[in-house]
Image 1 (cartoon, rainbow, N blue to C red):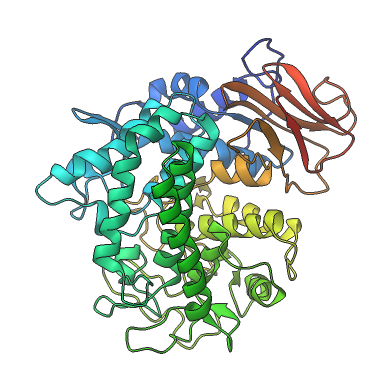
Image 2 (spheres, rainbow, N blue to C red; image 1 turned 135 degrees about the vertical axis):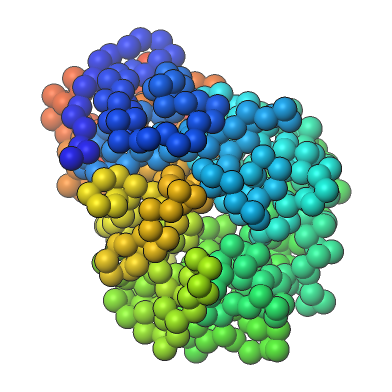
Length: 506
């Protein structure tokens, strides 16, 4: 059994204010004990506790599975950190794969990695990783950055919102701008939309996709919209009005084209438009991606799409959110034989995107259809419970939606598959810490009403260490009753219940 008990202590100053690292240590000791450590990268298992205790936020909640998977995902993320002669990077596969570039680097989950890694205390790892793709990969004989679609600009800007490292933006904005322009040259059609093969979305073999047809997909068009918005914000940050205006215009145009062209009125869903002109007529999880970037207008007609999430003939399955609607006649028929099926099985990559989109819907929109924070929590908890194989905690590539079987089996390449996010969903979405560029501390929690206590501690944000906790009775943490937020140990927010809160100049 991999359930961990609670230990806590109070520490003063810019250190964890409530939680000690005892729970983390117990978790890491267990994870190390069940791992043969076939591959050792920059931080081996015997050093993992020290590295994690210096770098990650601590989390405590009444659900032991959610809590344990939170630490497991950080422990597994750390396994993928490599030090190379050209800087640090994170791998996707723990063992070498043929389609990777130099140092076994693969770009398909880069943006997931940045979102997850933005909460690490030491910025060098993600700094180097971003620089690798912008400056090092292009010098290789066979560059791999554009082998897969990416929302890297959005991820870089959302990382800035955590650490406010303006010099990093100033240093890299020109390269990010050049990269966007390259995507326009490679993948933009005359209408202004972008096309992509499903394999280059890292989503083969899908019902709607093709390895040959230049289909216009909700994936890359949402990504490029998010990237354009982020580039406009970064340009404004460095007072480059020409660049800001360019990307504001591009974002506005791409949003309109996506809404006009990729919304299937008959299916009430964002769908793939084929190169030949018609809709693919398949509801797929990629249709939820526009909300990852807050692209859709706040209208009931668009929100209605989300009703499919909890429909058992739509995307709801015992082991998670399927990648295609279960009612579709081609559901689970596209197995390629080489190991990837995006025609229905549960993929953590897509689950991460969908949960982020749902969180945005609940937080940033008025129209929610049938979605509630209880739906978000149920799906997040289902995602946490899916981290298992033969009764032991595990993370692989993709799963049977009915049985939870990892469909690659216990393949060495699939262990600790670094192709999704989890910790960021806890910090940014469940607890609801919403990074901003100004001096407002904004928290929009989605925690379940039945929780009587929880704590997120040791969060490095805007140069301070945050503690966010709720204690119904005041006895669990000994800090008093209610919803409390501390910055460097000083209380900056107090509320009687868990609710959206904010404060200026914290």
